[in-house]
Image (cartoon, rainbow, N blue to C red):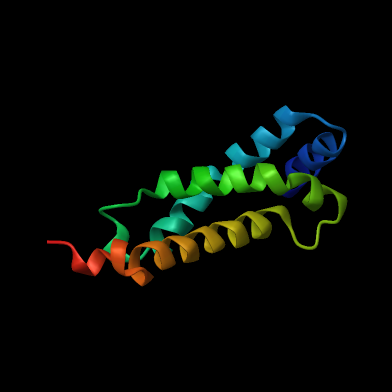
Length: 107
């Protein structure tokens, strides 16, 4: 998805077109999956799938899209990347930082 297409979809989304939001997400799916695959801790790979992380990122983005559309503080992909990194940090805390779910304690 090129910059002009992103700008056009963002304008449609500001107008209330929910399909434009879906198109924006889908236009960045492959790129985000590659990012997550590179950054996902190897100890979590048996428990967590890249596609699931991206899907969770899109769910969070859908919850926060109105705020982004009102005041975009960064390009759209960078915002999605920021949300994906937050999700990865949360997963690391849940699976590597908590004793009850610590992947290092699995037998």
